[in-house]
Length: 193
Image 1 (cartoon, rainbow, N blue to C red):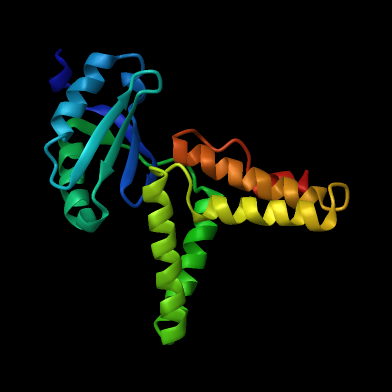
Image 2: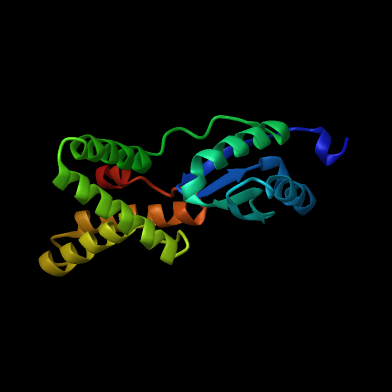
């Protein structure tokens, strides 16, 4: 059976606007298989680059966020041809919280021009920060790290340990996710520990 004859299980491990990381467990340590997928997906409209990681069996797609809808349609079609997509791991707490905050901000923005301007400003700031750092740092990481530093400086190490440790872990966890790793701990689990 050749590489092209078998659809292999895969799942989206991480997705942010402009970037998707797909894990193909059976492609781990298989550069030929990953190269096949890289070539097959590289003609999708709006795709900027495709990188593969044989060590983890991952394929990382960077695409033009302005063409997200078109890219996702072609990506889904191509994935259905070559991969057997399975459900992603259970919900990511941090992503769920961020999604809820964003949904509430959009609801408020729909009823107020000042709220719309604020939401648009922070979305633009986040987008620019991600572009400048090649998706290494986003606004969530920056805000959490800033709050942790402020708490550390203002209150002191001993009095603020729970807050700054929780915020530091939140920032570090999100940083690891952006880099393609799995979360190492949830902030709520650390806070309850």
